[in-house]
Length: 261
Image (cartoon, rainbow, N blue to C red; front, side):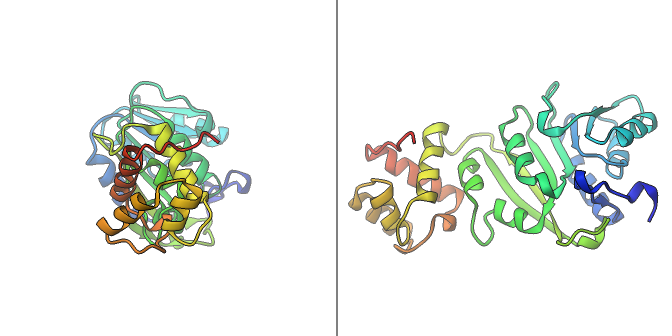
């Protein structure tokens, strides 16, 4: 193992070394126009092919030694910043965010990204199960359901753990996130309170959760479930982005407002 592939355990560094995966990521980024922000470039496995696109590229690396070395190697249109991505404030308007996200800060990084303005597309290497849950495969997470009206999550491919050095214990997944040009829901704060209320509510299935914990009138719940051909014992994680938006609109028009707890 070369010195460049010796990741620091405390930084969660598992470097991408599979050239076919690197080329795949670069193609996805190339398909989205505009400036690029790279999360955790490490030794530049992605930075180098991305720099050849000729677009403004900002790479944010927390390891000072690697940041310094990479900055010395990159052409003028590439800016390398020695910063923690979780504290980085976007400069300008990056159109594309890309990165091999350290597995131990995946959720924190996604929360940071989804709260950040301006960007339109994100191409992220994350844990396989995280990629699946974010895309709603096998059941969506609370985070996904809260953000679905504004973002579309898609799993592009599964990435073998053998594509990384040092090799992690689980496979990765290539997750592509697009900011929706037109949100499915207008009221973000109230909608997100509602989703949290439903996900954490008690009851056997959606019908009980919505009526007992959510305070939604039983006839409203019954009619919505029937219209969407959903069984009464369906769970919050079973809903799609469009179903969440429809449920919220139905509940909102029924006069119910989620609590501010």
